[in-house]
Image (cartoon, rainbow, N blue to C red; front, side):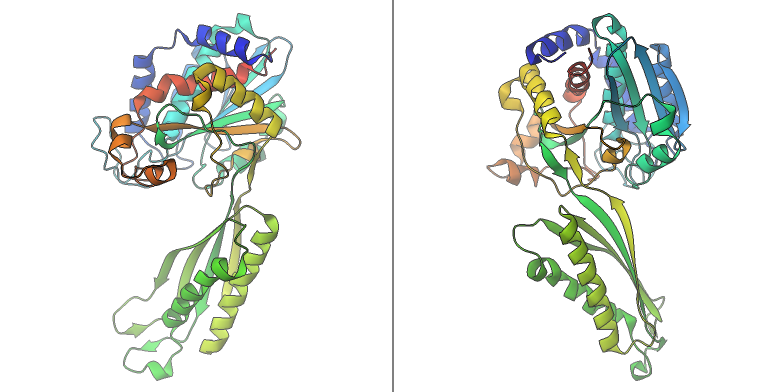
Length: 413
């Protein structure tokens, strides 16, 4: 099905039966019971149960806690729809009546909403199977936040045990006045890597620093020097973020420790820039440790995380056209590549095109109260993903299911 007008019309027809109250009840339940990466047993069971009831052949435990539902419906393309399921170690502060009941764990990134959208879309498409032909594969992915979920599913045979896709489709909730569907053809999200640094000094008594090599001072110089990498070693045309997220050293006020540990996160959009920045980190760490007189060389460990997410431009253009037809031309726009990262692209077998877009979710009352005059200013002032105050507007429940339904129908015969 290729005509965006026809796809939008059919989407409206087959999603007219979606019940907002039922979706809300499911969403509230998931939000109340968040589960961390690879612990999504309850969430996976709830998704699997809903898929089975509507006729999907369901496999659980893919990549430890992943769910795959297959609905074969005659000849035609194979479409994969993906939603991630894990929550974050965040203490919720929203005050919502359906707030998390798990201390220190919260769906602060909206993956509960993703699962609800996925379930709603899967049910609507199953109920209307007489209107399309092909195979629909619904994927509940674990552990997106930890970076291992997609890889775990692939390692467990996702690409060989289930029908090979012609396209992979997904979406993410994001801050912004509810009712918009940003699309970016090509590069849409950045690569993310973690770097662990261990500085080896010589410990001793705090009263005799001359007999030690203080790793805290050395690590502090490293942190300061790293701030110049992006500003002085990367061309202004490139977007790079280098963050020192953890600094651990010492056990007591008057003890100079023997080591200090740093945890870094690097976000890049160009492989050559990534290589250069990693090299700069290694050079700075080694140089500061030599200058301090560390007798043992430092340890610098690169832990590759997410790759760049690069949408197939033609596929994105087709789905964006459908969403414009479905929701209005003004609701779809391109806000360019984000510094955020995802493991979504790892689910796609080599050569398979994919598309990943966004659904804005900030309640109108929150958006209007936020200071700022343009989109960028306001987005910076409203609670966003990973905030303990992140609370998507439930009004996006049905539209978010419709975006997935329409995207799938744009490919299914």
